[in-house]
Image (cartoon, rainbow, N blue to C red; front, side):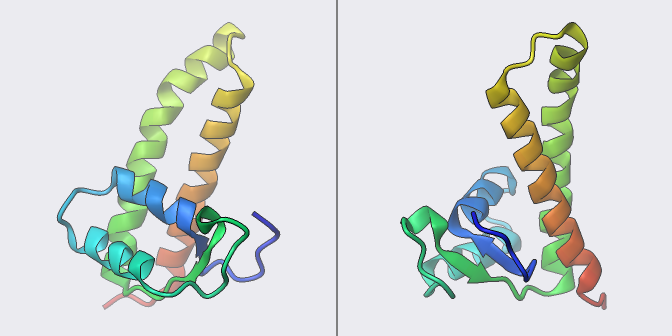
Amino acid sequence: MSELTNLNYISRMELLDTLKVLPSGSDSTRQIAMVLNGTPLVMGGSSEDDIFDIQFDHATLEAIAYAVEQYADEVAAPYVETIEEGTNKASEDRSFQYWQALCERWGYLELMQPGQ
């Protein structure tokens, strides 16, 4: 994805990946599904690259940020072992970095949205 100037902009791929780690049937899952079923802010070269402007309330962002952070932590544990052993692969590096960046983005959105 190209350089972002607004961290509220999230791609369809990032939203779909986020859905994978959220509890099914949760309010957060429903809200992301509603966004995905809407019209993107920017149409990408492929549908995975479509950009959406995320404007969720604090409680929703908090739940999403927590779920993504938990998953990123789960991914990190075995990854750290491969780093220590020197057996990590480029695909593992990219996956780890992707989930860390996604975790940071949701965390930033949570921090920037005023709480109740």
